[in-house]
Image (cartoon, rainbow, N blue to C red; front, side, top):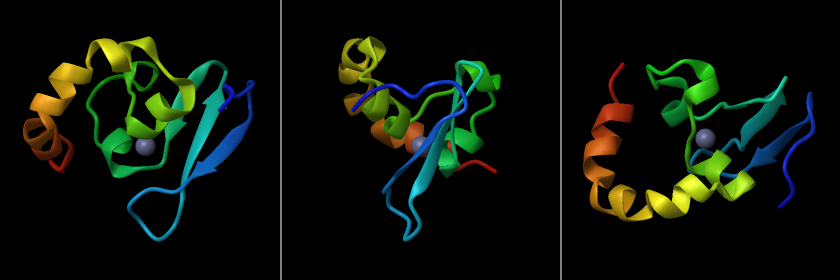
Length: 81
Ligand SMILES: [Zn+2]
């Protein structure tokens, strides 16, 4: 799947009935999923599984081991209000 151009958005089906919308705004990628929205990082530093899937981020591969073994922890972090 190609990267988005500035101002473009794409829908990606997640666990909700409604697909999540991934958007590139001036080089900052955002997603409408709770995992992205609930992160406390600045928006330009946030990511989520949808954005990693879209962009094929190298970081996803490097962090794959970490994520697989920390899924429960991350899930609880993302679930915080
Ligand atoms: Zn997402």
